[in-house]
Image (tube, rainbow, N blue to C red; front, side, top):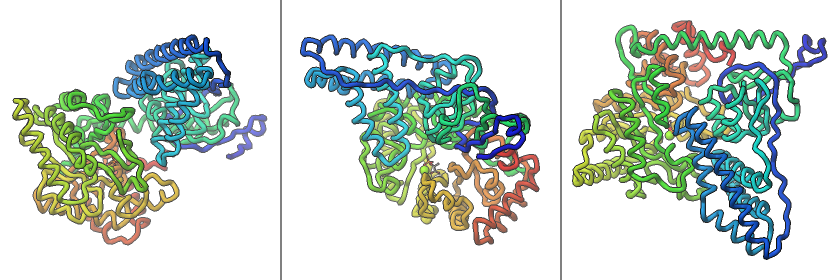
Length: 595
Ligand code: PEP
Ligand code: MG
């Protein structure tokens, strides 16, 4: 919190609150403090003769809630596309869950209590289970369940849905659900600021898709801000200023302008290849998880998709999608990208990613994850492999296996792939018989055995998010040890070098699809180490391309050699940051942009 003397004089003190940047952008405008109407639920006894009408009241309310959600779903589909809107389909499915709704009706009959009390009690049981799970993902889903519960109860109590903003506003709220985010976006919302929530919440994801600046995790913003207060939201730095001073406003305007110009300059690169001045081409592709992202990655100038996270198909589902359902998505992606290629990674469930039918584990990141799950469930694996194969007829599809920790897993996966091919052949269904297969190198044992693995596949892709977590024994999601999650730790860099060289010795290409691939400080080093492909979030693509186009391979090699001689991450980072600054002066580092 900072007090600014300039505003103190005018009686309105500037207060800065620090949160977490959830969606880029800057906005200045009046606050609208949204205190969500949480319906009060009281227990009321009902007479046996009232049971039928009580159940009818519940059914009418559920039908109304569904109608509201259908409306939100249609609006979200229109604004964001079908994939991003899927969260609302999941909420509609909860309303249609006959087991849940049946249990509620039974309890009304048996316990002779009012509908809203039973709804709240029954749904809270599920919610508590989800909140007790150790991962953030489940907590976010619990909030979605809350939203469904409140929606039913509000309708049982016959209360109206709020959805209007008066003029342009920055919405300040304790928390926002996906539905709130979408509903407000119909009005003149300038930004979102919430006390709670993380960057992985659906509301945060939606605001990024909607391009509405958002800052989450502000702790007590709702206590300090009143409706009508002037706010400035900085979705790059993750801060908001209450009563921003003239200086703050001016500096934010300038910052917005800098980002705009920077983004425009980068956009000019879209049609150009990612090639160094001495003609070394790096395949620069994107990490995506929905067909809706294809249009954006084209705008960004991507050469296809280096990582398609297929597990996104499982969000909000309580069972795995069928082969046909999967084929529909994979086919859309492969066709949409043609002639560029897509690498479908088979379901990487477990760890922080929830899987239908998954089990509670003491140590999920060291447990039933990725290829381990699929090899134990060949029925599910074959379904997915057949669906991917069916999408490969235009020969622009590749398959990649995650979380491989030994050679047996690679061999077993290949046997099952052959089986899937045989089944399709038997049915006369066409596919690319020479489909390329690759392995993610993200477990230290696979890194050590990279050459042996490389001998049996067509490509390797380094998954630094997990490789670093396992190599350095640092949980990738634990804020307490975040400073130890070191991309530039010499042990990490030596492993990367080893993997690239191992692949090259076996004559195959080696890429990287972890977050490190999109870090501008790492690009020169990775090019110098001989990386063939970088697959990055499409937003980072132009920046990385700019760097590749600015440095000669021979200089990058020299720089990489120097980096490998350093013994600490601090020295390496400092050196590489100065390289980017000197060699590619147009690329501002994050801190120079003030992010
Ligand atoms: C990785 O581990 O680097 C990776 C790309 O996979 P994910 O982040 O999906 O685990
Ligand atoms: Mg991974």
